[in-house]
Image 1 (cartoon, helix red, strand yellow):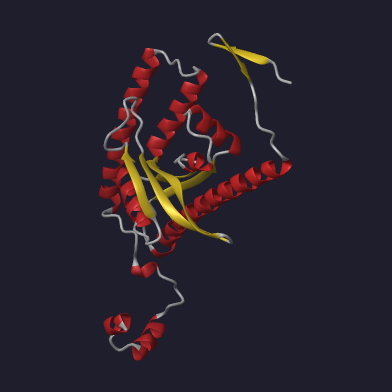
Image 2 (cartoon, one colour):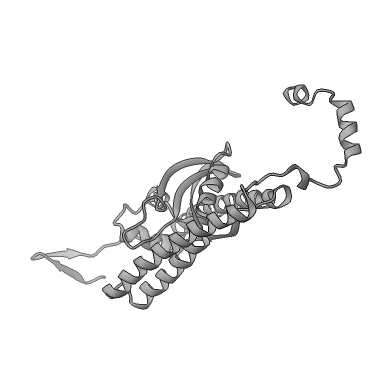
Length: 258
């Protein structure tokens, strides 16, 4: 028998309903299936971005994507976040956590972040739930990044579910600053000296200026950036192949419409 607990002058019995093995198994299976759907959604979004990067590389003269990474929160951290927020202890509360799955895309220049965002969210099975543009409106500490919660369908044996994934898009300079800022806050356990915070803000402004300057220099040296160039298409599609295609489709535009 558990000991009584004193609470505001009254004696309360700390009781907990008996949890059977079947109940534990049911909860584990339901939570496991939920986390699996987030992993599938994360992999789907990452695959979409990787396909864009490969398309830019194979068919274009310029690939705006420098790096792609992804992460899935651990089961323990998801549960801790629900409890920390004081949410009801239900699976719906877990589903309300927006950043269980995340994909980060590092781009060359600021304008590239918006271009890749448009290319990704323009796909018919990608729904945009929310956007936070910290590039146009940086956080007070200087943090810059384009954040979006997108939703994609995941096809399971039990049916189709639509699952949210957080997507972060930022430049190389913005990513370097964010990584350094995270390490500093971890070092000081959140209690960062004012002088360090001031210099972090100045570094964020310097990184933003560097982004702008490098983008302008790239334009001067290379001219307008093109992500598609016909001359880079599969070299096996020779002029002779194109002539034969013209025999099949004398009017290419009509052929596309048909």
